[in-house]
Length: 211
Image (cartoon, rainbow, N blue to C red):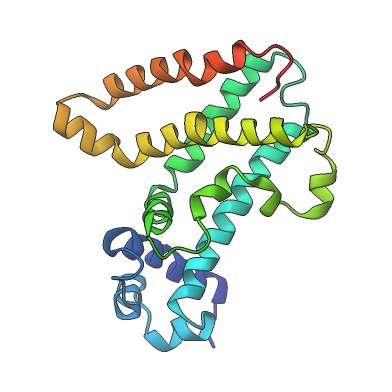
């Protein structure tokens, strides 16, 4: 038995995240994860039954925290006062969270694009009801209290014009800068302007809509 089980478990998850991002989930091997984590295979199987179990744990933790960020924001009055300013602050905070999880974000994109994929991980970024505990969902029923048609419109708009542009920006920004000979600062400035003129403008044109 390990003296520091949580530390070992965390090291395995961090190593798996790196290997999955480099090789893809299907191409990654437990041997490679063990090597990256500097542990033996037996210890990995002690904590996780399979490679799939490791991936599921990574996704669960990521999406839970992602959802909690939004719930915390809504529950403390998020958009009640200065909605535009507060929404922008939240987006900066959320973008920072995604950026610190770049390896996992790449895995989420790769797994979502697989033709045989059953559950699409990317969709969990917009479907918070599947990630939030029941007691906390009760706290934001009024916030989500739209009819079915409105809910569908909100989800489509947020996913395709709000979330996906950020995801694409983060996973492709290094390659974009290299290919088009731009600095990171130049790209970020152009990206922020594009978001302001598209997604943010959409919300400004919808009076009374919080998000």
